[in-house]
Each structure stands twice: as C-alpha cells, then as structure tokens.
Length: 121
Image (cartoon, rainbow, N blue to C red; front, side, top):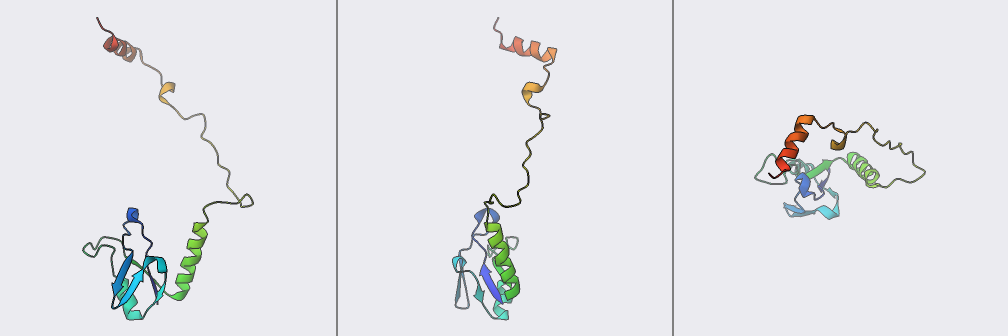
C-alpha cells in the first residue's frame, strides 16, 4: 500500500507537516511511502488533530493504481493557466439588467424625510 501525508492547508484543517509511526517519519514534502498493510490500515484512521475525531484525516492511503490516478489528477489540476490553443469557454459579461442603488426610484416620502434630517433650523 502507498500512503502520504496530505498537503499542508490550514484553511482546510490540514495542519500536519510530519508524523512518526513505528519508527517511520512521514514528511509531507517527500510524497508517497510504500508500507505494509497493517501500517496503512492504522494510518487511514489518523486525524489531523489527534484529540479531535471530527478533524480531517491526515493521510491518503491508496493502492499503486489509485495513487497513480491521484497524481495524474493533481498534475492536471495544477495547470492553472490555459493556453491560447485550449478549448476555452466564452466568458459572458452580466446583462445590463443588474440593478444598483442608483437605479432604484426614490420615493417622495423618503426624500422629504432625508432632506428634513439633514437640514438645520
């Protein structure tokens, strides 16, 4: 089985950068580790915060085939910028139907009360 510590992302609750279990030091930046099934089964239950069972799981635990597919997906997702030759969907601007406060009609009673409040006598 292959395991790796999930990428550090405090916003999502992924706060571990390293973890040691039975003499194996798992580091986020190293990536995948090949381990025995018993070790993988334990690591599949480890949470990011040990005292909080509702925190996210700390490890990705996969077979080699699943790990390869996950790496390919992450590599594809990592290509944020699109090339001019890519099939790019047209970005359509909003219609002129979007209202702003300037478009709202001012009622006569509001305008009189607003003017009266601002006026000193």
